[in-house]
Image (tube, rainbow, N blue to C red; front, side, top):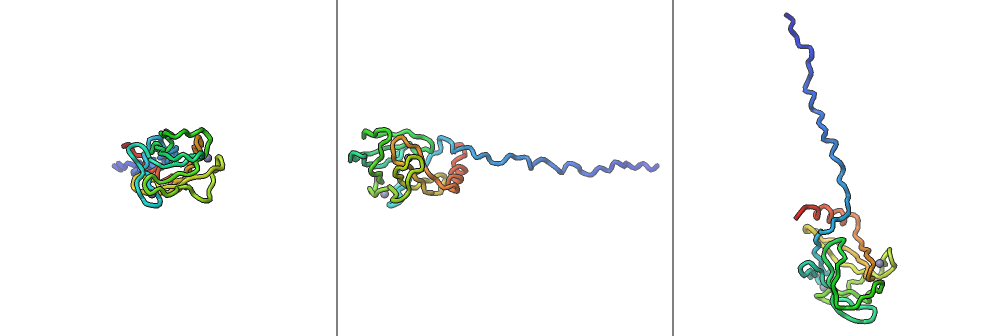
Length: 158
Ligand SMILES: [Zn+2]
Ligand SMILES: [Zn+2]
């Protein structure tokens, strides 16, 4: 008669393993994250197709245009100037307003050369980026927050 089911097991399935999602992996900024580049002075957009366009002056005083692939971690560069590996640009300027992008104080932590600064945008957020202007040096600087934002906003497949 006392047909009691003593098992009484309550819903024991409430401990799903959602705690097991791995932490966001901070893989490096993927090649292919397209960056819109902007002059910090006149706010002009410096992109032309896949390239960002800058006016530069070489150590020898030649002035010309350098087009740099507008992708983080891509170092493709096109110019008619003869840029020797290791030579430092005398100046790098906005191709629109011709104001210098060289920052007065910071030095490249890799090679001690001058750095230039401009703005980049990925997914609508504009952040400062600094890049070394020595040919062959690939150093660039982004503060950690900005790099994080670019990573997150640029991480979706296009
Ligand atoms: Zn400008
Ligand atoms: Zn450098």
